[in-house]
Image (cartoon, rainbow, N blue to C red; front, side, top):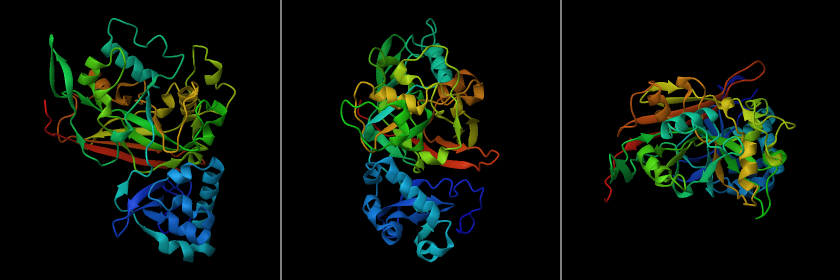
Amino acid sequence: MTWVPGVDAGHPYGVHNLPYGAVSTGDGASRLVVRIGDVALDLARACERLLPELAPLVSEPVLNPLLAEPATTWRRLRVALRSWLTDESVRPVVEPLLAPIGRTHLPFSLGDYVDFYASEHHASAIGRIFRPNSPPLPENWKHLPIGYHGRSGTVVVSGTPIARPHGQRRVGDGVEVGPSLRLDIEAEVGFVLGAGTRLGEPVALADAAEHVFGVCLVNDWSARDLQAWEYVPLGPFLGKSFATSVSPWVVPLDAFHNARTPPPPRNVPLASYLDDAALPPWGLDIALEVELNGTVVSRPPFPAMYWTAAQMLAHMTVNGASIRPGDLFASGTVSGPEPDQAGSLMELSHAGVTSSFLEDGDEVVIRGRVPAAPGRPELALGEVTGVVVAEPRLQ
């Protein structure tokens, strides 16, 4: 139990969680914090008083210096934080450093961004829509986690308005340039990386936890009409690169130690670097919720994902590609087998759950949590929000 007032043992932001974020303080400056309940602990000032050797790693408004350290350092800090927030003897030092949560910012400086396509349910549904006369899954889909490199410069923190993208789209037998008329969402789970690697050094499945710092929520907005026209043969470009929203809280990977789930059965043999049969499970028991203009329209289940985060990281680096502190990769749209478990409006509208794509002024909220279970309190991942706005564009 923590001594922090109002935070009981079952609180979704209890000491079993302790996500990292960056918030504006009273003087307008941004500082790193750790959330406990509905308040935030000033991380730099706490370390200066109680763990001074780690204070330089958290004195900037981004996590990158901490991310660059080995995972043993991340775990050392987490153990210390849990101790400070449960030990009454240090309460007089720590309690004055707690404050209401202010304006949130992206808590890490982004390096590379990679988006995957790891849900069989989503990939099959999109394949049937985009390629009705072909098999829904590409031939390679069950052999490797398909992904693409996104644009890190347009990754924004939750709450940032999303300007409707413009580009080329097919209209009848012609092509027009204009605003996307089929603006969509993608409810995803993101993974923040640290402990970088050298060029030519792949990350093995068994070593994934030494590089995955934490978990966040992602809405990888999609302009489906731009995407459908441009994506052959090289894949997503303008239809995906205009905006990606990320939740402001990064939940440490260690917070999920009792929320691991086995992935779905695989019916295609895996290459050795992706074969996780003999390793602890890397699925995560995360339940998502998609809300459109105040109405919940979908509840995608993350345990249904065919490919795990460890497999995505292993495949992302098997060719020798290096990773850097602050790199982000996302799962791709999370969808389940039921019509109301889809993580995109394209699937939901095709199934009759919703009626259209996004209009100007629409607000999308994606929430995530690990549900409570015997011996396990609920774990909150927060939410990622965005409102669509119209913005003039040259044509």
